[in-house]
Length: 200
Image 1 (tube, rainbow, N blue to C red):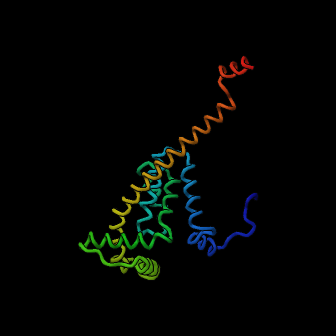
Image 2: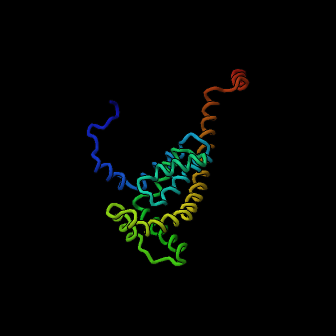
Image 3: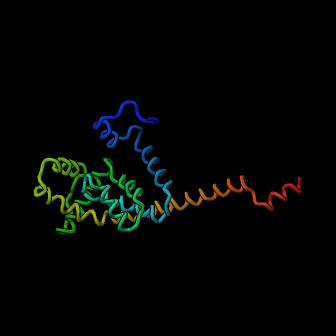
């Protein structure tokens, strides 16, 4: 089939690319930014969808961020594709800081104090415990993370909404202007064409 890769990547290779892009994080960020801008929906719907994805990425629901983002976007009538792209807010570079922040905020809400937690230590504990411990053993760590995910997720979602809304609005306005300019050159108004003939 046309454009199909000759050698299909293995699962390990696909996992490695998901964790660390082939080119660079900055190039991947630009790629995701262009994907968001080029979505065909209103700026409000796109921004709502992206905000839903950003909120979902703050939860410790590893493996269910897409489904959580889709559900939230559906409830608030956001764009579903934008919600999937919004989950990129949570990635291997930001997860240590997101999880440490949600854990500290949750502990502060529950016990009135925020422990000193190293982001990478919390990330390692949570990641290893996720596959080695039962839910009952993990719950003391998961509970504050779920609670802390709400305020942090709301802040990230609000910031994401404003940035994405303004960016998409400017991009769509500029695109409409360019398309209108091309259309006027290809199909000039009848009065304009007559004036050009008379002047000739």
